[in-house]
Length: 427
Image 1 (cartoon, rainbow, N blue to C red):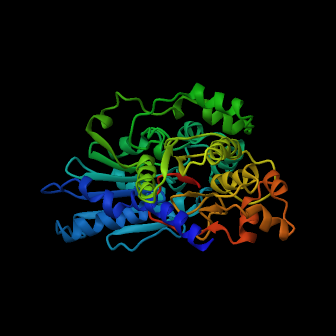
Image 2: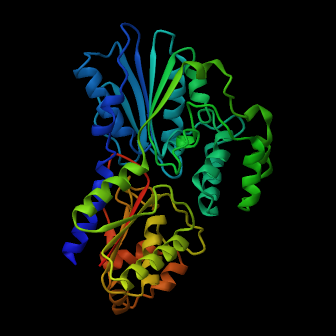
C-alpha cells in the first residue's frame, strides 16, 4: 500500500507544483516605472509565497529599495513566508478574525495613499474573501463571522457566497480598485474558482461587479439562510451596492490569470499517462455535493474495472458539503469517504482527493488535512477498528474516519491554491 500511496501523493504534488508562484508568477510581473512606488497588496492562501517571490524580484533584479517598494500581504494562519519590505500578516480562514480586519484597513489606507505616479500590484488567490475583511458601515466582525458560518453550512457554491459577501464589504466587488484610483492597478491572480471568473476570485476586489443586490437576496432565500433584521437591511441598502464597469478606476486597471485549476489536472494527467494509464478527464470546474459527485465517479470506476481498463479518472473544481452531522471534515475528505462507501472495497481501485492549498475544511489550522486516500481495504480496516463508514459519512466525520486509518493527506501549506484535485486509478 505504501507504493500505491506514494503514487497518489506524487499525482497530488504534480498538480500543486504546476501552479506554484515561483514558476508561474515571474513572467507576469510588470516592470516598475522610472519613478513612484511599487505598492504590493496580496491576499489569499498563496499571498505569502506570491509576495515573497515578487519582493525578491523587485529587490534583486530591479534594485528597488524601501523608498520605492512597499506593501501588505494577508494570508491564512501558517501560510506566511519571509519578506523584508512587504508586511506579512496571518489572518483567519475560513472565518475572518481581528488580525484580518485590522490589516485589511491598512491595505485600504495604503491603496488610498497611491498617486498617479505609483503602481499598485494586487496579488490575488483563493482565500482572499476571508483574509481581506472590511465590513461596510453598520456591520461588525461578529456579524461577518456569523454570515460566513451560515454560508459555509448552507451548501451554497463559492460564487453564490461571494455574491452575498461583496455587498457586506468595503474592499470586495471592485472597491479596492476604486480606493487606489487614480493609480494604475495590475492584478495577477491564481484562480481556485470554477470557470475562473475574476468577479468571484477573492470576491473580485479589483474588477467591476456583474452581480446584483436582487441576486444576493435570492441566494439567502434559495439556501434558507436566515439573517437578523439589521444584517438584511445592510444587504438591501442601495448604498452598499458595488461599483459598476463605468467607474473610471477600472479603465486604468489590468487583470491577468497566472494559474488556474486546469493546470493541476493537466499536470496530473501528464504524469499518469507516463505510468501507462488511459485518462478520463472530467474537467477542472466540477461543482456539486461532495457525496453525490463521489457516487457518480464510483459508477465510472466500477464500469472501467468491469471492462478491464487501466484508467485514471481525473477531476478538479470545488465541491460542497451540506452539514447534517457534527463531525469534522471538508469536501475532499467527504468525497473520499463517500467514494470508499460506494466502491465497497472493489479490488484494483485506489484514489486521492485533496485541496491544492494544503487544507480541506478543518478548523483553520495549518496542520489540517488536505484530503484523504482510498484503497481497496479501506472499509475492511475501518470495520476491524469498529468504525462504521456509512455512519461516519452521515455525521460528516470524514476526518475522524481517515485519521483512524492513517490515510489523511497531510502536505501542510503548499504556497498555492488552484482548488481540488481528485484522482481515481483503476487497474
